[in-house]
Image 1 (cartoon, rainbow, N blue to C red):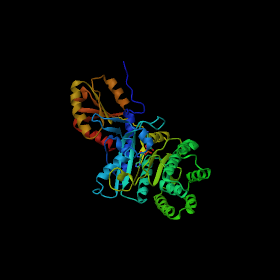
Image 2 (tube, rainbow, N blue to C red):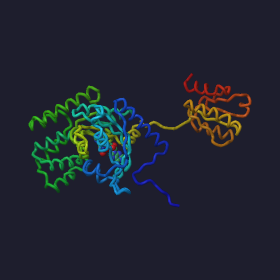
Image 3 (cartoon, helix red, strand yellow):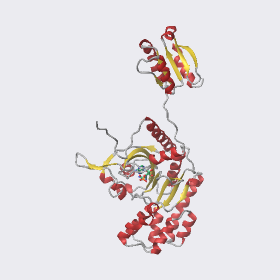
Length: 437
Ligand code: HAM
């Protein structure tokens, strides 16, 4: 017989896996609410055009795309950013500012599979629209850090690497590079950490090899890891623009320090982000040990809403992926054990007793208790074994002797104690037991 398996890179969620995913989503959602972000969602299938030349070549090459029955070119969403730009752009004038939105959704990229990377994954996206200054990044980076700390992770476990495409562009312009060359250098910088010198090959293929002095300057800019060094490096260059930009850096880092978050955030000009639409500050979160792929990434994208047909509207945001994040929680022992035990297990004599038990089962469930019972008649011994294995704290015993006396036996499965309770008091007894009365 043929067996069918999931497509490579796709995931199935058995109940324990689903409980772990729910746990993560629930805390992300709660955290976003505490920051005053509102939740939205959108279609999984989008016009292919939404991603062409907007998300960048890497994502475009990874699209799951096809022509639908109406002849439309469509793609499964690889990311949320173009979609949320369309949503906000369409109602920009009616939306109350600042627009702070978040979503938790599934995405699809035809990627080479590796640890922490699949072809189908979930992201928590948070974005702010309508705020041109670093005030948006302050709020976003604080939210990103809290979304990770909410699970017990600390600055020992992860850090946020902060960089700036504006500064990179001003710097490369000051070195005399034109727009096309700047774009090619940024692609190389994005890949440099992973590939080393190889990363500059595409640049060399288009424009010839980079001049040695220029390359040295680019590599030393890329290695900058502090605001002080950054200030020194740009001090002698095109003063005006670079100086003003450093003011934004100080505001951002000062605010994060005031929030007590400085220990999570590091200046790191080696980050430029692969996606094409970023225009200013960019940041990525990584595990401290550097063993895993990126946990999260984001930045400013001031031109995208307008490019997608909306009004000119500054924007910034980030996304955390669920796969690397779950790996990190597991590595640090921070993923709780989700055994789904009932509160109460009912042990039932026979068909007549079953009908009596049903009334209580229904009432207990309606009162919010998790109640289980054997779906079919079963010997008492087997039922007690099932009750113990279920992890329930209480067993309710509906035997014919008990029912003849108008009582139910309530057995505390952890203390191994037992008492008889009049039928009318079963609900109150269970409620008192679980409220600790
Ligand atoms: P991204 O860096 O492509 O950014 O993805 C963000 C995060 O999603 C990554 O750091 C990673 O955790 C996760 N991720 C990405 N691809 C995969 C994959 N194939 N398998 C597993 N996890 C993956 C964006 O998507 C931007 N749209 C984020 C953003 C929001 N920028 C502004 N607003």
